[in-house]
Length: 224
Image 1: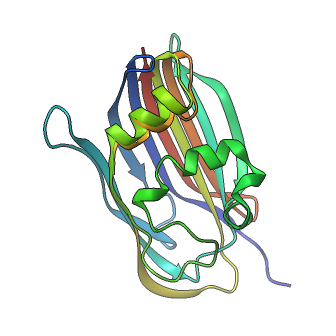
Image 2 (image 1 turned 30 degrees about the horizontal axis):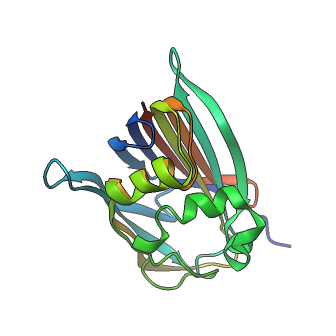
């Protein structure tokens, strides 16, 4: 029997601020870290401001092992209160099972719906082609955060840790892409879809594969 191994393969940190509940959301930072470059690595990961009203986030993860399956994500939401403290959510989800039945996890459904319109990560495992998250606008997220599920004002961080099961995988260079995820898209999710109390937050996503973290994503944000 082959030995199963789980390693964190990347971390994404997103900081955002909601400056007025049911009104405004904005990203303050977005960064990604590859922890196991044998699995893959980021080509780019950034927050871009086109003008005062249009900002978005994008990322591209180059995947070196396919098929990409047996994935878990650990999501942690943090709020800044004399330092970032865990707030509301700290959950781990089997991504493949979740995508087969999104209604099984309302919280993850809300989170995924906050970016999936701008991504091709819209089907269940396995993944054999480029995965894209392109120009997620702040306006979209603003609606989610202020209208669908209002969030209290403050600074937040969303952390995503991705885990990947590395057994019986062919090593082939391939791209995993998250491109131009706009802040307005997330703002809409956090203020309208799943309202959150004002404050500073940090949300963590820890993605596991066979019990080992392969990717971590952290999002910092403020709702006020």
